Length: 346
Image (cartoon, rainbow, N blue to C red):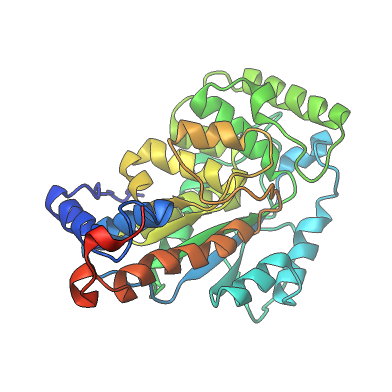
């Protein structure tokens, strides 16, 4: 499976033109703060000073994890498929927020341990009934991992929009994400693990011990794709592939919380320029996410103490992308408004 090549967005001439366009608006310099930063980034991604967002979408990837056999979750594995049913019934938080943001929502069975049958609204990309228990063996074979990544790439290739948000659902996936973070950033396991679905302090300590033992068991695994296959999940691998394809197509990538960021971490180890295309929606309340964002040199848009996943942060941040684009498209310039730049307030 060839890894898509991601071109950096750096373009000094365009960056200068975008800066001029932003500074020509009827406002004090820099007064729109991060919206100006967003406008510059979107312009560089789209290779234009005429910004536009069309057909934004969020994809929620769902899968199960064999590591739940080690008692690392406050909820049983069956909650994964039950939440997928909730997504299909339009009853979850992501359904509410996607409607609010006027955003298409796709639900993908990447590897849930449940037979849904043919269902309207469910994209069947099942790679298997969940991964294996990485406490004792690799979660996926290398072939399975690459197939999941390819499935994510193929899915993105069918989309028409230019903004793509990422979400996930999978009991046990904070454990997988913490293991990936530890292996790829060398952050101590204790600083990577959190409460996930609501573990007690004792439960968090147990999760930490499970990860530490698993990492010792797979001590020779270090290359990004091998790390992903050993500790990841079908939904994480599929997201990593989808992100790479989306960046190759010069889409804006809306990154959600801890698990989505762990998928991006893998993708960035393979193609560092992917970070040019990423807008980080929020800093999760899950322990470790702040440090993971720091390792990616990311500045999140929102801090709402979220730790739900599902792409909820992506949906909540989408209106800010529209604001960044719309002020560039609709706001008057000093010249068009016949207002002196000196007449605006400090």
